[in-house]
Length: 114
Image (tube, rainbow, N blue to C red; front, side):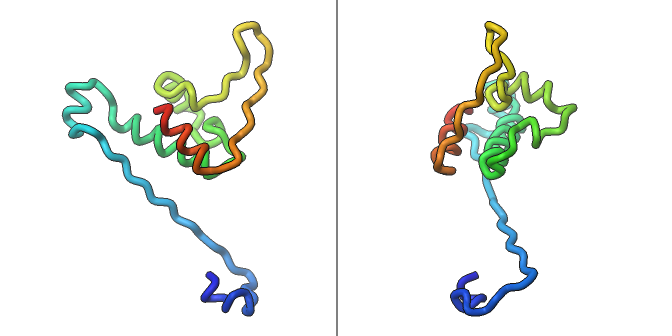
């Protein structure tokens, strides 16, 4: 972008910038061993990682905003930590924890919860 605008010398009127984020997911074992031996659904793990990345990139959105409403029960069962807790055990409303300042530290924190 710097080269295209000659370091800002050329004005870019009515321009859009699109950023594409690519991610891969690696498993310790083969897909068959993950399914049969570990009894773990690899698609859930990949979906969880994608949702963590999406909520991190879209800082103002939560999993509730991104996931289709009909998929929320499944998400609540497989990854409850991705959904905000509405109330505490005493019935008081919980205040959401502040988001970390750095994007990379937030992503690392969420991925380590997987």
